[in-house]
Length: 247
Image 1 (spheres, helix red, strand yellow):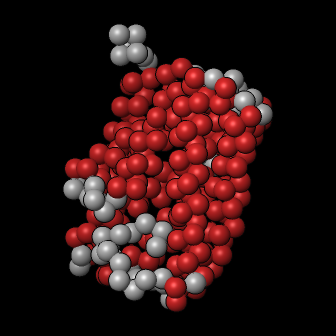
Image 2 (cartoon, rainbow, N blue to C red):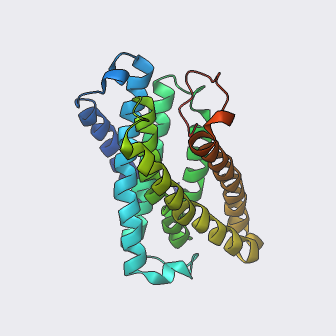
């Protein structure tokens, strides 16, 4: 009963509704010619616009949190700040919204990997939201959103058939660098921490399992990214038409 009355619920609801309203607003923007002719690409474009906005806000916010509260880099379990807590709630609201968007739009089959990721991310974030533990870890995890700015931009250019643009060619190298510094490096740091310390505790063990599963997904996505952008001759020609992950 105490959990049902937790003050975080209004924050989560507010964040979820904010992203819902944002999606409605972004749907009013004009679509690229290659996108507007395909309903699936249209939905994916709008979905990516929301993701792009979330990545910009959350990525910058996470950097500011670490600048304001640098002890989060070391005291991953106990370090806490109001800004960091609100950031975790904000991003959890995005994952709730995106999960609902995928399910309601009947894109579960094409986007099942996103759903698995979102469920794991929400499970990890809820430990920080409802028990106020590992908020620092949540903020460190959200450094990935800096990388997602460039990854999402890449996917938007791909589905709009803009791979020949100079921006795409420049972005694929910037994206690779950002992927390493803001996705792979924080994951390695967090995994090392949980293996040495938090894995000995009940909640830490739960988060460690989630982290290891996310590590596997990140490595798979990284291999797809390298294959698609730097070894295109090895990319299978026949792919599922609904697949818009990092291929």
